[in-house]
Image 1 (cartoon, rainbow, N blue to C red):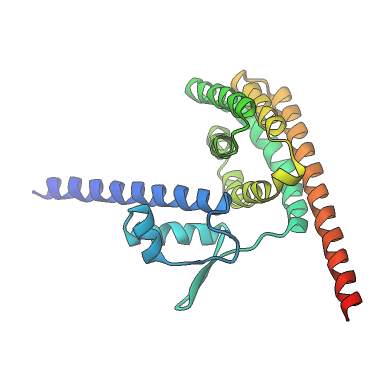
Image 2 (image 1 turned 135 degrees about the vertical axis):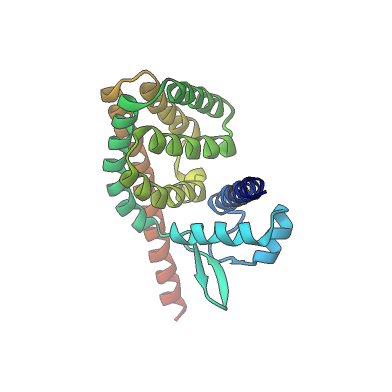
Length: 242
């Protein structure tokens, strides 16, 4: 009886973890793709009803999102989707450039046969997303690629840092890409990196990573410049009105 009870407990725990993962990925995508916009006030009860997932997994997923900085939990008050600041993205990119080079190199060297097949599948998917200009497919593949790079690199310290940066970077890109970026181009840059890792070519993987981050940085700087110009123009209009 004890053994059966133990098995049941483990099965219940695994089910709860699965539901928490489902809640996390669905909420993270909703935040990153702005279905839950910056500043939005969230309700565990409403999210539970919308996603068809119990409140406990929703709460645990929100706690994980809070650790990653995508939501802010104000005890006994509210849960807010955090804002995004283009200027802070340049600081994020300083870290991402070094971290992603490490992950690309380590993954190319250490990935298993099964992981290399997954990298190749992601590369193929990115090419398809580029051909169809499908932003949601790209966003999902981008998240999958980042997670796989962390998994294949076998570096828990890099993994912790990457988890914090990933959602912020993808949300910023989705928020601004229609004004300042080329989706097919960035999808193909991701495909180049995934393909190099799949083939076990560390040097090519790092070079592809550098090209990708170079493009993301130029996009970010263009976005920051546009925002600064808009703020200056708003200031002039207010001054004229005064």
